[in-house]
Image (cartoon, rainbow, N blue to C red):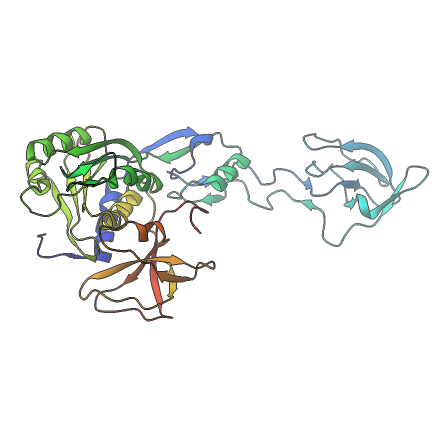
Length: 405
């Protein structure tokens, strides 16, 4: 694969995903409380029927036979009641309590009347007011397949089942190296130097895609020796090293020579996408026999983020045993130009319904203002353009819900 043959954008995503999937790490058992954000390594199955026993969904009375009924006790949530032994008996019952054996109906407190002699009368509703064992799930039923991303709702289901730990995929470890002698790490830009914006932001994107960020280092000096030293050090602890800048073949671009020195194999070397050119993904031999990966992100900030969503996100999905997410469809709010033989990823904001995407402003390769006002990218395939009202693919950014209007 050479620089003169950029890979189709969709194919590049697939190649990155397959590389990650083939190198997916093993499983580890972790406490349920720490599982949010991880990926199931094996199916999550119900350990018992859910509910495990018949459960009242109301406050009222559990009755046996025809009324009126004589109260013989009370059942609260958490207790194990004795059975009702004769017709005409009832017990007061609370929401969430176990329904006693031999109960034939539940009557809501608001649908009942208690006479002077203490006996209860009332009519049960047409739909029974209790939950039966197995109503939600049966013992051994698969609730979530392996590869499911664990979120708080999945954690809640696991807890309901009785799990204390979950078997999850090892979290990919990532490191970031920032290249460029022209970069400042503090203060405003000036005198020919620009402020580094990728060192502060890329770790956040990596974490949102499921990686743990082991280190951030830079700016790395623009020499081959410094590049090699930094990459080797990062590969000692990381499964994935992301670099920013140096993906061209200019006089101070040392990434390609460094990869050659390390015996790396290109998975993708340049992608036919705009913005975002050039980017790369390489496989590097690891000291323990497991491959490591290096993703070369362009130095221009928006282009770097497009390289992240194009190559790094699919790679990390594969490394975690997750499926490669399909692209949802949206309606183009306005026209979006094509980029000739390249895929165009156009930053866009979604409307309140989440169904219409309107391209953002301030979207030059070196700009970040448009990114900060967007939810993702409208995807315009090579040789096409999108008109207002067209249905188009949309590549969402991994934003925290409620983070942007």
